[in-house]
Length: 464
Ligand code: NDP
Image 1: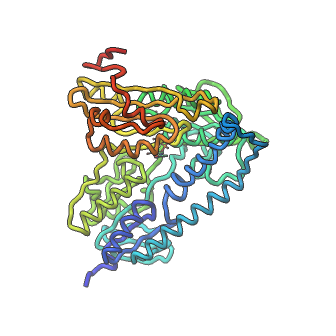
Image 2: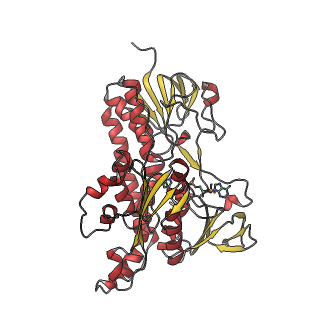
Image 3: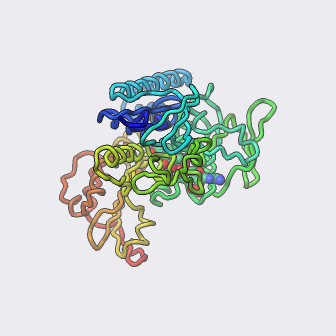
């Protein structure tokens, strides 16, 4: 008989924590999982899922416009924010219930409480002021938006968390940031009819992505009417007597807005978690330090997902959880593999990307062949929409391996899931060339770009 109450205690009921708890419990181990708020974590409750529902909602304005080119007369349209919110809330609730049910079915004990560490094997449940012990503890408490507290007036601003619960759709919004969240929400609000301004401190939005993708998406967003201001930032936000806000930019301008949204990164939820007491060390950003197997600096304590500083993506947290269970409960030491992770930005147009951007590949590869296609996808022609689609393959000229694939346009997220398999598998450009096109699709372009658009040899662009 174990001297501990549980074989595994998971703190945090998000994607990573739930997967680890469910899988371990299903193996017959005694598992408890504590969650202080709602099961599903950032992804289900206040991230990926409601965001994607908002993205769908925001796309209808363009669908209605495009329909005319296909012979449809679309009557007067109207959008009702509260109907969308209610539908979104119902769907989030449905998913949350599934998460809880699956945990119960697997045999995990659900504890609705904040849990803090009191030692490497000891956890205190604040709701019941109860102390429990576990042979292994897994921290999967995620992160939260950076509150940007040093900026005067930050308290007047919303983050993505409040954006999911706004009582009213604003008429004008100012969004600070140029990453995933800022860009996705700028497009959501714009699509729903909100006058949207995006403020980004750098040269162009979506730092770290392929340059052509960044330029393409910024150009398309501006063409739709989103006001993107680069090389600027917010210095202060003031509330006016009428309850609205004024956002003061570094460039000197004051912008009026009904809401100001901050999307300047996220912070790990390590405050008051008892990490120090348990010997769990944090890095300079407050994230839990882990080794290749998600072990923290405390024996018997592991951490995964956004509370660590690996890669803040839901599928990564789930994969880390699977690896943790394989290693600790199935005797198969497995390191998470976060090389060549495909990802999508649900901007409008959408981005799907996997592997190395051209600008990063230049430093690592002597000879690159770049295959680049820009075209109007068929669906845009009758619709009278000028938006272009872009596809780019970055190929190592020496091995012919496709080392990066970048798509901008409709369904790019769906396409890159499949393309991700090809790039992960190390397929060559010749494999792509041997693959028959599926016609008529936009994706056929991926297998019909026979000649490089240009090459980059020893850092020099040739043939463009
Ligand atoms: P990101 O890290 O993507 O972007 C943060 C943005 O804030 C960057 O543009 C950054 O600028 C800017 N920023 C940071 N600090 C400051 C500052 N002091 N002043 C002004 N600007 C600043 O974070 P997000 O919050 O957008 O998203 C968090 C994470 O969540 C993402 O990294 C992603 O992993 C995940 N996510 C994934 C999604 C998906 O898969 N589709 C969707 C949403 C989130 P700079 O570039 O100059 O550093």
